[in-house]
Image (cartoon, rainbow, N blue to C red; front, side, top):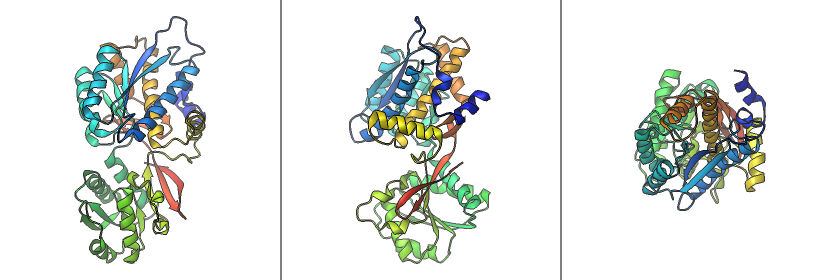
Length: 384
């Protein structure tokens, strides 16, 4: 499709949404946003909200969606499931929105996903990665890859790009995130031709991994997959090098942050690869355009939450545009809801975080593979 190709070649996602000017009698399209703007996870919610808000601002400045201005109605759910569900009910019953972006974290998303499935309201979360988020109904989508997807992608990356033949895994058996990533890596490795020669587990409070790493060292794997958050990854990487393991380390999106650990010996990460949803130094024109506009608006580089909030808006706006093209009166009606849902399901769009299509409401997309070189993150490649 020529229009889709244009996305990849231009610096502005907004071209497919723009009219030359707002029509004088065009109705405003209302879209809800649910995000934690205060509380323990506000840093995530603010960035996600900023990304969606920025995309909307740029779209409105360029003519909106087929001449219709978009109004975002934003509620703070404080990262709390009850607050999130309350926000959803207000958006649907009082504000009569056409669709909703959010929530941001997985726990508040479950209740909203269940309620929106019953109402058949189109929703897209930019950032909730738990696999169950999209299982409540065909109306609820996500812009981020889910946890099992990245585990499988890293197994394929190791075999196809690093030419690895053997792998070992050390994972947290007490944590669903870590265990799910291990299972995805193992299952994909088996079909890809990468042999898993060792798998060692530990518990949440463990800080000494020498016994597990001694067992892994005996297998001399080409790669060692470490599916855990950055603080734990640092302990494991440090002890692995002391145990004589020379394998290439593979991480996950939770690895992001290892280079800000105070007092850490960053040399233990040298040559480590990990996937992320996005990387601001990606030379893609779409990424650099977002970065320029975001820095102008908010005074700092957009993180992955901001990029995913931006992409969630892009996906939703594209679905609304196609509904308008088909003659649908977009608003809080069953016909409009269904048209937007159907269009989101057939998304095929170049976005900041990669080209996105959907399978079972989860994105089939690229991951940004990051390599740690001499104490710095370096963009390696896009991969899926």
